[in-house]
Length: 343
DNA sequence: GCCA
DNA sequence: CAGTACG
DNA sequence: TGGCCGATACTG
Image 1 (cartoon, rainbow, N blue to C red):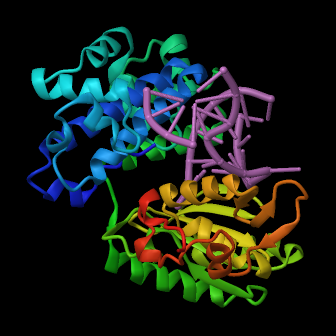
Image 2: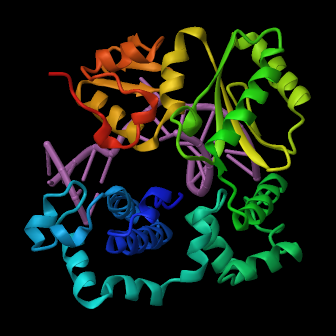
Image 3: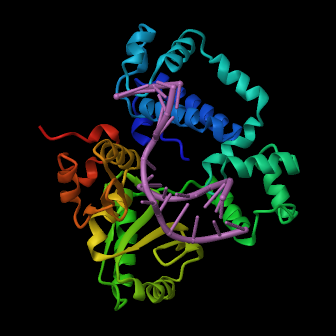
């Protein structure tokens, strides 16, 4: 999970408390995730508040007159409200300080890296005594991970690559991503059985920086295996992270850009674009609303929970419509609040 | 952890 | 199957 | 008090 603080929040000078607290709650979320699955919802709650603070325009201190006042903010409840006030008054959060003491705290930052989840980190710590990034780099060089079960060749390769890339954080400026996206589109369109292909993800949302390039490709199932092979042939990725018949994930070019491609039916194009365009928070909000209405959304469509009947999915517009929501343009699909019901 |  | 990742 | 996004997809 990547910490949600972005350039926007970094550039505003008023929100120093928000930034600091957002980071602390993100770290606390990592602590709870590390502690095991029974704490995973607590972890999610902290992660949500971290994101709320990162996206907030005004400084949180403007709302911190009382626990009740903070409680009114979505995602913030009594417990976290108290911690916010504690931080504003003392500069620290006791619970956080205690978590730091009892966990291998330096190790937890690795959770920001793709391939390192709670279970992986616990194994590294408990079986190999790894306490931080340097320990891990050394252990990898000395091939100490090979004996561990669940650490196959592919996982180790991906871990090494992710460790290397994490140093040179390589989000691209939007324009560069657009050029690269166009280049990839051109190459893939040259493949005969590809019926349609489009850019999705943060590139489609026109986010100021883009971390990876996401695409939705339309093709009938019997062509997909061959299409995946063809894509690999024309793109010549440096690495393939995962390949199945509905999904291809790879690292492309000198900049080591991650490219994710999802293969779907033509009638699933809308739902696949909706899913793959995100943002994650927007998707979760839509899926929650659907659930409240007795429906459920995935990348293949909207379904009636009871009958399983497929209700929509060909276009994004019909999906928002069916949910009773105003259509949201990709650029505005930023967070849960960007979803609004029709009047 | 938060929320209905 | 559990773990991890994707939006 | 109980649910928390997904009948996700891929790897080991």
